[in-house]
Amino acid sequence: MRKGKLLLALGWLALLLAAFPAMAASKRGPLILAAASLQESMNAAADAWAARGHPRPVLSFAGSSALARQIKAGAPADLFLSADEDWMDDVERAGFLQRGTRADLAGNRLVLVAPAGQRVALRIGRGMPIARALGNSRLAMANPDSVPAGKYGKAALTALGVWPSVSAKVARADNVRGALALVERGAAKLGVVYATDARASKLVQVVGVFPADSHAPIRYPLARLKASTHRDAEGFRRFLLSGTGRAILGRYGFTAF
Image (cartoon, rainbow, N blue to C red; front, top):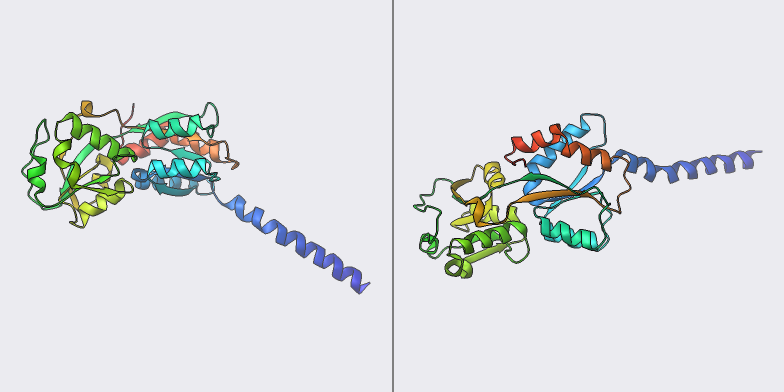
């Protein structure tokens, strides 16, 4: 009799232990892969979603190119927020998006920044003497070969006719926040980042805003991934696209379409 009760108790214990991972998973929110420039706004959106009684989304930030590679390597994420359409197109062509879930979430502007308090006599325009302004220092940018902020920046500098003069002076970062950090530390005299990044830092100042027609429109597409299994993934996607979600991004300087 005692042996039977012991076996029954052990059986219940095994069931409870087996249930713990599922219980823990149910308390986690969906996994969101988001462009590095979305850090403050997405954390605010995640907090707002959690305040409605949902598990807080798990946020992972990096350059859009790195995130796209993770997705194509099989990362078990729920939503992807890219800082440009090219990397979302890449993931879509590879067959990793849930059909009908892609939508443009927000826009941004591109700015030139310098360390706060540093005097910079430079006006953004065609043929601007940016190389002379840099002197022996560097121009911080996200990798212009792959990362959206860097690609936009290279396009803008090319359109203004000054890319050849600064291409050898570029300090390449893995993402736009890495470029921002180089300027914040004074490791680069100037940097090309999004307006929202400059707004998020007290350690840099905006030298000027690049003309909107000097680069492709900056769009942040959002989509749900085929690998998504979280019950809140679609709800959070719709929340971000709602008036409330877009208003949160607006508070951090992102533009609407």
